[in-house]
Image 1 (cartoon, rainbow, N blue to C red):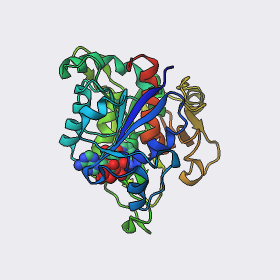
Image 2: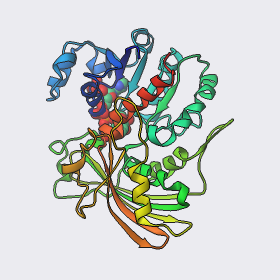
Image 3: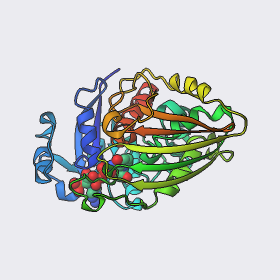
Length: 351
Ligand SMILES: NC(=O)c1ccc[n+]([C@@H]2O[C@H](COP(=O)([O-])OP(=O)(O)OC[C@H]3O[C@@H](n4cnc5c(N)ncnc54)[C@H](OP(=O)(O)O)[C@@H]3O)[C@@H](O)[C@H]2O)c1
């Protein structure tokens, strides 16, 4: 594989910094441009992070930050960009489409374009076939090469892969309660005093996204873009908890037919193996200990790229419950996006 030059748009943010650390020794991608908001333009990456009290990997410290909105110039420096910015939805869509229209592919962590029928939202192990919609998107945008592909919302990363794996057994409905880390809000425990000794039972927009995105990810590609799944229902409540990194989910899954928890376990332990540099050896890692997985102990399983499952319990003949966990800024954000970019590179989308 030829080494590709990549840009990180939103490099100073929580997710952007994770990209920079994950790509340091990447065999296929090398960082050729770092960009952030107008306040950071012209600063060295090291100085910008130091001014916010953040450490910077030495290899990237001297790179000069570009203005994220300068899509024409940045597109000329790179083969593709990763995008993770904290700006209003309409602006994020405009920003991402400006790169795509400059014929620069975008792998996005933002929610802005995820609901568009011709933008694939891909968990590489789960719905790689959704990349087939990209030619439709290129026709809408009037591009030959540029497009946007998104990774999913971090809130569904801990629950959807095992549910998707079980779909062939007649999955009908899933009730999911999430316990989400503060880094998911771009915060740390020390910069979020309200979370101490507390849970916050509301994350704006998160319940809705967690109910609609799984249907899109399980949907089919048609001539009108991706048609969401209608046979499976998802109900979700998302809660912020005092954990630094790692989103936990309590899941109750109901099936059309009788289902056996042991059969599910066997299915999950073999599900979703990929031969890509960032793919974990095991996508779904099953814990038999009753008090696992825990964010503090298990979020870095498979270098933060595995989904951890435990507490698997038959709740009735048609139902199983389990606890899921994934690292929200690795698998749920930058790592998941890097894996998606590896899949796109492997399939020739950046050629
Ligand atoms: N944190 C997570 O676990 C997680 C998981 C999945 C997805 N996401 C998504 O990833 C995106 C970034 O999240 P984050 O937590 O990394 O946010 P963040 O820490 O607030 O970082 C935001 C980035 O956006 C840049 N930015 C701010 N204003 C801008 C503007 N007007 N124009 C261009 N760039 C601007 C910032 O640059 P400056 O420093 O120059 O202001 C910074 O680089 C969001 O869409 C979020 O929903 C986050």
